[in-house]
Image (tube, rainbow, N blue to C red):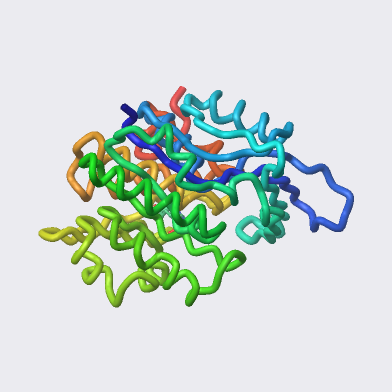
Length: 302
Ligand code: ATP
């Protein structure tokens, strides 16, 4: 069985450093929160499977090839009747980008509980609050996967990941209520955690760990007997996208390795720092032997 199974939509991201209306070269790369986490975990040496649906189109082929190349086990259905989702990302300044989605009616929006054949009994199932926003059947797939993994004594991890382009805060609050109650590990920014409960501590009624991501300041976690914080690394930000997913990969990697909670946060901060220091969502994530690189006294070991 896999260390981690994750489930969700991956799109092709068409990225440019100019506004979209200017003729500019577009770089095509896979983009999906859950597959980003899968790549982050695979780079750290964990066995990870990604479950999804893709169109039977070359965009889908590109996503499969990239993820397999990163060592992720790809378990996808190819749907001839629906396209792979696309998004455009126009980088306007180093830390501001304009995103547009072409994902309504995508292959992944038809995800359903019928796609869970490859779920097995992972140690951790990682979900995000994006998938339930795609469709009722995708929301159902998340709930069913969470129930099955819990029944098999695995842990369910949920990154709230509120996407305002998909649903409002009120819709997300309602749409994530049941799934939030099934999560052992809840991760989000401060405002995202407020969608699930009055305070991080209040979520410990159902979760065993709650993690708040705090950008450059690092992260904070609560468990039933601990409250720990870990400061972020000082790095030059060239692209903030993918930091949160990188953080999740590092944090879950620490849990899989049995590290104390504070060190799990530390590993999350390390992967998050690599993510913001590199252009692209996941391309900059570290391998296991690079985890100590940010602490090296000599920035260019030679
Ligand atoms: P995303 O932009 O991917 O949605 P997010 O909003 O989910 O990110 P953030 O809190 O911005 O999450 O970042 C996640 C983690 O990445 C932080 O907890 C931290 O570890 C790291 N990180 C983010 N920004 C910086 C930064 N400027 N410097 C160092 N580390 C950072």
